[in-house]
Each structure stands twice: as C-alpha cells, then as structure tokens.
Length: 140
Figure 1 (tube, rainbow, N blue to C red):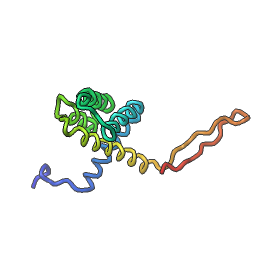
Figure 2 (cartoon, rainbow, N blue to C red):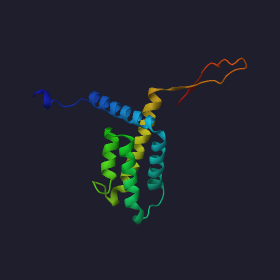
Figure 3 (cartoon, helix red, strand yellow):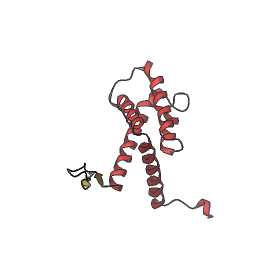
Figure 4 (cartoon, helix red, strand yellow):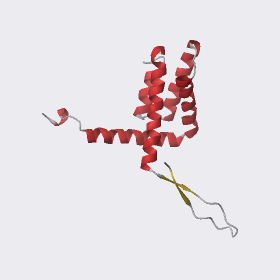
C-alpha cells in the first residue's frame, strides 16, 4: 500500500473538521450581519412555511449569501451548491439541506465556545478617565 492508499485516521478526520470549523468561524467573524441574515433565512425555511413559489428566490438568496460569506470555505461552498436551484439544489431536499446547514452553524458556535471559553468585556472609563479593568465572563 503506497502513501496515497493509506486510510485516513480518526485523529486526522477530527483535525480536518477542526480546520473546516475554524475557517468557517473566521468567515462568520468577517461579516456577522450576513451570517445573522443567513441564519434568519434558514430558520424561516426550517421552522416556518415556505410557499413553493418562494422556493426559487429564497434558495438562490441563501446560496448567494453563502458564496459571499465564505468564498473558499468548504462548508459554505458545499451547502451553496446543494441549495442553489440552478446547481444541485432540489425543492424536495431544500428543507433538509437548510436544517442540516443550521445544525452545522450550531456546531461552529459550539466549536468556538469550546475553543474560547471566556469572553473579555472591557470596562468603561472611571471617574479619573482611566479605563476600568477588563471583566472575564464564562462563555458557557
């Protein structure tokens, strides 16, 4: 068995997943407003009613937003292609794809919480004009 035929280990798979989640997290941090907009659209699809006449424009909007949020980020490229109605996207798989993407976005948030369990909140200016010391809050 040569190097190319060697099976990938669980540790390697987990490392690749962490790299993918890290790349997605950086993309989200770059445009949090677009990320929130995508989440709202996904929640509308997963938890609400979408008329069949609205499917095409909504799917196209989600796919284009994913392309804009994370060009070169595998996770966003995968879902963009599988949601985009002119690529692999199909109306009957639209809700399950959106539900799965929402689950993946939740996984990114969980990854971020585990990686950075504390947030720093900067204090305001005191009476003397000096900055108050930062406050550490647990992010869990």
